[in-house]
Length: 228
Image (cartoon, helix red, strand yellow):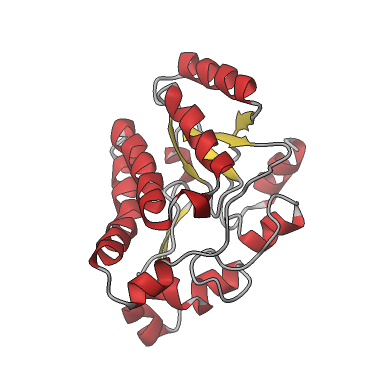
């Protein structure tokens, strides 16, 4: 998970405040255990990752931590990372989503409820090798986020990367807080070539995504470093 404090360090963002609550620096500890808003809506997730993480209030109150369900990363289809070498617009930190949630706005509450269900649906799709469903869930993830936060918060360059991927029929969504996106070409190598050509034309970099386990062994680490 690429949090905002990491993206600031690699100069992909200029500010590190949490994109959800806008009150403290966004890092893993904050997102998983401290952020009031992420705790409220129950799950911090990414459709494309090796864990399903449930931080519902029930588990946090009873256990003091969330429930982690490991995923077999071999279930994932080939994925591609898209990013800009010199990002100029990674979106604005400030958003009204937290306030709208606390005010009880039905649209935000229902959207966040749907967001929380996506990773479980994604896991089911992967287990059943239903990659068409998996692609639609990736797209739905981004569409929900865009509808809640708005284009100014997401950033024009981030949106453009998603739209470039979708222009060739690839599914796409943010990797985390923006600055890069993950794409899935369910139609195979010919669609990957279209994606590469579209990204080159738009000035974006695309490369195969490397997914490693949450707790890598020595072989995982060796392979990871060899690929860098």
